[in-house]
Image (tube, rainbow, N blue to C red):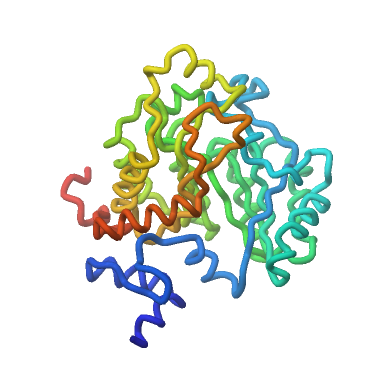
Length: 343
């Protein structure tokens, strides 16, 4: 069917078609289940684009005493920094190392410099801006991704990113983690959800793509509450979202809490998490591209749960699960103007 070959080139059309007709759309490769990152990047770049993590040696106001010490109870940045992201290496060297890693397989690959570790709008602003500009000067780097906290972005920072976005691609990612203030307090996050709402809305108002990060399974949150987060986040002008399961990591305050009071934690099995993500996606606005569903910490750092499953493996399980159930992203999403329970 020729029409079916049309949709992979226009993922937003595919999303709308699935939303309107209430069923999955079969493409050349798979049924429409969810909006992936390719839909987001494909509308902006012509070929393959890869994030390259960069460690700028920043810290966090939740660690240096400004808001608190010790950081969020779950946090150990060693879990997601690639080996090439040594803080002793300059930005250019880190990016060149990353390019060598990916370039062997994809010689024509383009790259986004991803300032991932800790809070990359916190500290000496002039120093950070020099790092951003150094990254953008590296051959093959076509844009910038800045990971930060919602409470560490000011109007001045957003003005800077807005100016920069007129020259190159800029994408801001915020650590949301939970929409519930009681959970944010429990994990010592140091900000409330109102800070997230302000940061996301102000960033989007400047025409800058906005991403968010959410942890599913934080202590004290029920299955229903986690599913309900999808509808709450759908009201924000988010372009992308990263999900991952709660992992208890060695060297964190949460690891000590887990050892002392394991009954307060309800760590999920893969099957339970599949059911949760499926229910979450059905309520998530179709236009939000989901970048990731699971995270895999190094075995040497992981306390629990030990799934031993990579994101691409989980994606295949999720597609099969949702296809068997006949469900897809946005199937139960209700825009605010159609909600009967809206305030």
